Image 1 (cartoon, helix red, strand yellow):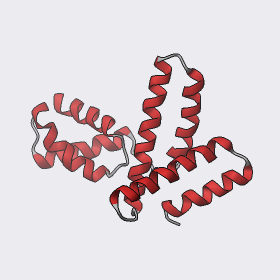
Image 2: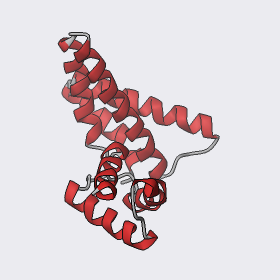
Image 3: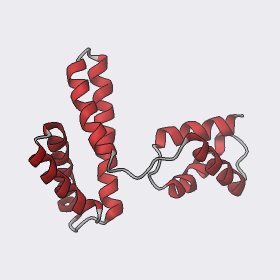
Image 4: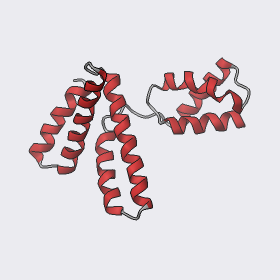
Length: 148
């Protein structure tokens, strides 16, 4: 079953079980996928749906950070609950060690010598990682490897 098919099925299950947080998160996700399809003018493939999920996850993380800064732990907890639901729809994330290994390979391939070569490393590395890690974490790893 594709991710796009799984979302409405999981939504139905959440509605039957009365899981309000899951229902809200999945409705928002389903709407975001639908809106992305309208914006692009065609149905999204699996990669496109994963991209939408990543965007929604990032929005929740940003909201959690802002709510915590503002002292609104109640709203941060609500966003955290939605984030937990959404993260289940992402592909398995790479560990930091796996990111480092892949980064070292790309650094060797492009013969990067220092921090000024970060752009030459990030492009090919992000293609290999293909959404299995956050860009911020990948950037940190590459920066540390090129600086050292």
